[in-house]
Structure formats: structure tokens, C-alpha cells
Length: 179
Image (cartoon, rainbow, N blue to C red; front, top):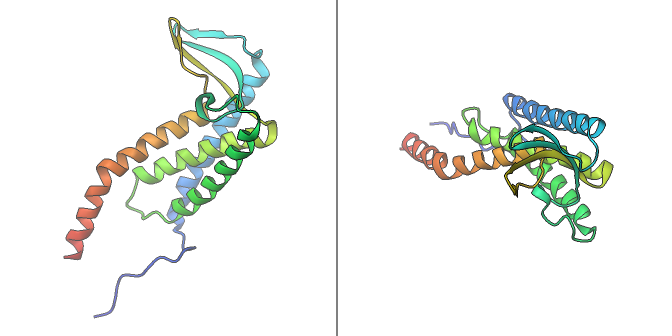
């Protein structure tokens, strides 16, 4: 009986995954567009009330997500730029090799990829990331963030859901098909 299982080569991509790349590109476009709107319409650090718990506040983030390491002395720019570039290349390869029946994991990867590249564009071109979404409750303030940070956060949550809840079902299905 012929072997019907073929191994995927390192550079074998599936064209159906271009949709996921398109989603990552959409996240980049939305991120850069909203940052442009914020930069052209807001004054730095001057909050504009939107809702009782939300302001638009233009800020520059020299660190990672939610201002992590923002005052570390400058080395973090090169570290986060390199890290985002490396992760982006790995995620493109990973994304393009996703089987057609997977939906949550490639969605997660596409969102993380789009967010990482959106913030990478800022880091390379400006030396910092533009943040403008400022959520708070009374005197408790969440660090300002942007659409890229939101995409990375949602993507990470989806990846955790896939890892802890859906991977087990995929393994069980594969074992049942193999038996």
C-alpha cells in the first residue's frame, strides 16, 4: 500500500493561508492609520475624554507592551526591534504552513504578527511606539496602548485557548484517524 502521508518541507506553504497574511496586513494598516490620526489630531500627553473610562491620550512608548522597560536607557529599542523582527519572520513561516482545518491558531498568529509589525514600524521609523488609547477607572489608570497592542493581546489569548483547550482535541482526532 503506498504511503499517503507526505512530510511538509521547511519552505512548503499552503496558498489558503494567504487569507491569514491578509488579516495580519489589515491589522498593520488599522494600527498605522489610527496612530496617524492620533499623531495628527492630539497634543502630546493632553487627554481627550471619549467615555467616562476612556481618553485619547497621545504618548510615546520607548519600552514594550504597556510601557514595560520604557525607562531602561535606550538599549530596549534595539532589543525589541530585533525581537519583533525575528518573531515576525518565524510567525510568517509558521502561519504559511498551517493546515486548512485550523482556524483559531492561525487567527492568533495573524493578529500577533500584525501587531508586532505595526509596533516594529514605529520603533524603526520613530524610535518609539505611538500609544493613544487610555483606559482608566477613577484614579486607577491602565497604561496607554494602541491597536497593535490590542491585536497582540487578543492573539495571545486565542493562542492560549488553542494551546490549552483545542490542541488536545487535535491530538485525539489524529490518533483516532491513525488507528
